[in-house]
Structure formats: C-alpha cells, structure tokens
Image 1 (tube, rainbow, N blue to C red):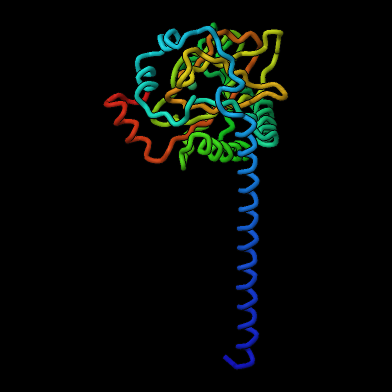
Image 2 (image 1 turned 30 degrees about the vertical axis):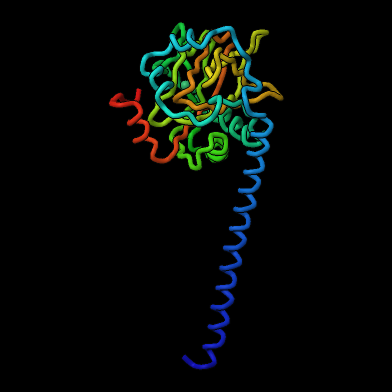
Length: 282
Ligand SMILES: [Fe+2]
C-alpha cells in the first residue's frame, strides 16, 4: 500500500475504534442508570411495605384449623421445605407505571380475543361451567417481561436469596362470581418465592373485597390479604411452597383478575427433592 494511503486508513480505523468505545460506554451508562432507577424503586416499595405483617388482617381461624384443610402433600411441603423470611409473606405496592402498562396490555388482548374458560383450573371451586375462571395469556409481552424482571430483583432482596430464576408467569386469570380457592401450597419444584399481582375487579358491590387467606410461618391465626384500591397494596410476596393460602369466602362480585409470577433459587431441584424424599411435584 502506498504511504499516502496508509495514514488516512490508520486515522479512519482509529476514529472507528473511538466511536465503538463511545457507543459501548453510552450503552453501559444507560444500563447502569436504568438499573439504579430499578433498585431505587424496589427499595422504595420494600420500605413502604414496612415489613412484618403490616396491612394483613388477623382472622379468628386458627392455624390448626387451616392446616387441616390442606392435602397431605401440601402439608408436608409446608413442614419440610426451607423458609427464607420470618413471616413468609409481605404486602407491596408496585410502581404505578409498571402495573398500568400491564393492565393496558391485558385489556387490549381481552378486547381483541375473548378470554378462554379454564374449567380444569386446579383448586378453584366454582358452581357451574359458566363460572369457570377465564384465562388471558399475557406472558412474553413487553410489560410482562418488565414487571417479571422487577419482581425477580425485588423478591430476591426480600427473601435474602442472592439469585432467583423465573420459572412461570400464569395469567391473567379472571375468577368469576361464586368462586373459592381451596387452601394449598404451590408446586414445590418450581414455585418457591412468588408474587400475586392484582389486576382489576368488576361489578363491585358493597362487599367488594375478596380476601386471600394466608398462614404466615409464625402466626397462630390465619390472616387476610386484601389487594387493590387506589392507595392500598396491589401485590403479595409470599413463599409459595411453604405458606398455605386460599380464599375461603365466595367471590361476591362479577370478576376478579390476578397474574402470578413464580421463581426459585438456582439448584433448588435437588435440595427440594432431598427434603421431600421420594414424593414428586403435584
Ligand atoms: Fe397458589
């Protein structure tokens, strides 16, 4: 190559390398900034939640009476598998923009394609076929992925587990009038720490609340978690394979919609199988 061409080529290569470094730096700075905003939001939500059983309402149902409603497998899970937090559950208010993007996406999908009935829904009690829960699939959408990522970090901070893997997003599931939910613990191979996010309810009457009954690790009584409302918490963090939960009263209103996110720590399978012996996931 002629000496006259070597110099411009060298400077061009130098300029392109400089540009590449600049772009990489800008992307990295943006990612770090986004991450720091995410962590700030999480810290805010966890500190607003105040910890403990704040926001949960004690009922007169005794621990032993609630445990008696569980199947043997579910009871064994609650007794044998490790626990990660003091109480096993926490009410949280999600950042508004994360939640509203998910709700907008859900409403659009439901309007475009009517939700399909889910007559085989395990553990949901409903009186007739036309009261079966409805399922609107939103997993994989941009708002679902964003909320899933936020919850992964938030649940890890809450539970003290350094890493969590997302194992399932289920819903949006819409329960219909008259539904109840049999007390249970979730499938232990994949559902370790989870979040129930309330989406919306319709046909609200005076008795609009449809409480979720939960049995915290250390409580002598069952507690009620009420999700929704303008100011109130809209999400329950819970240790899903060890905290028994259900809905003992029938839904009085037309519809009540939730979405469920499940996570487990890496390497959980072996630990869980060892603790549960030869029993398999339900
Ligand atoms: Fe459950």
